Image 1 (cartoon, rainbow, N blue to C red):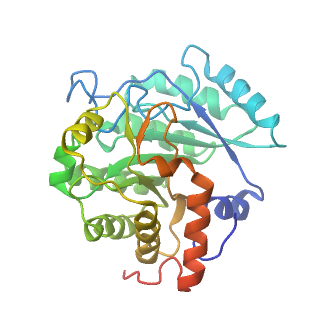
Image 2 (cartoon, helix red, strand yellow):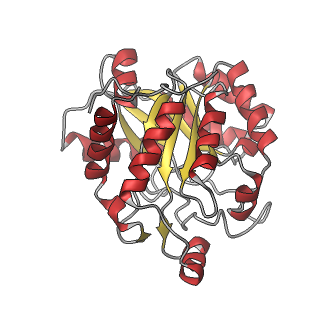
Length: 305
């Protein structure tokens, strides 16, 4: 769905590559310092056992096999020429550098892979990893997706993010110095945050060197500590109308050239507790587009450098 009211990922890809690219969600078999005992053992409060990689392939397959399996699934639905290799599950720079080199090189060596996208934490980007990413970025574009979620330290402590905001600042600056593009994950609807607090997070991201942003609705998933907290407290979750309004307000304060990689998100239907309206993703996206037209607003309308 193309709409000049905001800079969508699809539009940005067509401008840059001349076509839409489809993501192949891969699993490198990494873990996370928030799970292996380094920082904690239970992960972030909202994170499921799949490490946000419920839609990723099986780590039992090689990277090449995962790519071929993903291609088969997609080409059965639509003609596809090139892809984004998306390492999604857990923290994909949290492994020995040689192992990272092997799995990332296996991905970028596939001729049909146009972009290497790596989801990780800002505190898992040592000099050796940064040098590897810089090297790979000379072969094909590398995107590093950083899980920020919020700039508010109280919320960050509650969700057990595990690092302070300056660590994020250092990581995104180090990546920018190496000309590596970053996509920043934010979560809208975290317990205790007001709309203005969420807008402050988006404003902050817009002042960083980030190339893109993901606006993710908070999903309450089964078998997470957030689900237990929700059962105990019944904290309010956003309604669809509230979420549509909030996303539009976020877009209005976004830097005009920031690529919008996500406006909501997919919660696995077998795990999703709330908000259940989020399962109608197309309806949510249509409502955002429709409301933006009604308000005659657009990305960056209220942005201040």
